[in-house]
Amino acid sequence: MRISPTFKRFLPIALVICTSSSLTSRPLASSSLSSSTRCLSSSSGSSASEATAAAMTSSVPRWFQKEISITAPSRGCHLITNDVNKAISEDVSQIKIGMANLFIQHTSASLTINENADPDVRRDMEMALNKIVPASWNRDGTFHHTMEGDDDMPGHVKSSLMGVSINIPIRNGNLALGTWQGIYLNEHRDQGGWGGGHTRRIIITLQGQS
Image (cartoon, rainbow, N blue to C red; front, top):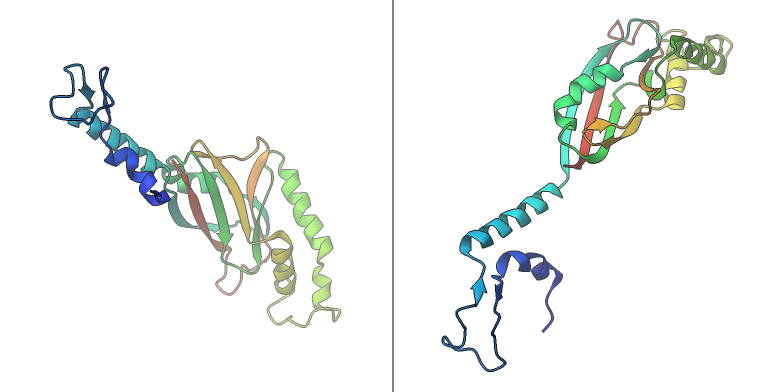
């Protein structure tokens, strides 16, 4: 008789295991079991079932999602690792192994991971981006989408170059960033878009097993 894989999964829960020191090869009758026969008690069976259920539950992926808003103080690259950790601390602590995704809901800002120690790195990153996509392209005919200011179209290009999403592994309840790695919010506009200021929304999605 073939046993389906689905049925095999639940055999440890369904079976009551008995052992005997004097079982014979003849057909079993009520009198054929000696006094030394031992069966798992109902309480032991319940414990085994609970343990199996707990193991199955722990293997089920857990999902969490948060939205945070961060106001960049100016155009440039800003370290936001502490803001992210504060927002997810309760949820990420429940995940032993998994992945965190950060997604910024804007077209003239971006996310990346880079050095968290020397602030000159963030300054130099902004300078490099300005040389890669200069604002002068807004006035020399390179760009046609120019109605929103010199920082707008360059901001769109920088956003695509840097990216709007990053993934970070989760290990033992923490983001598995390297010692010198930090999460950057890169604000590419002087005016922060139509709304004024530099408030940016970031969706954080956590997934993993406990």
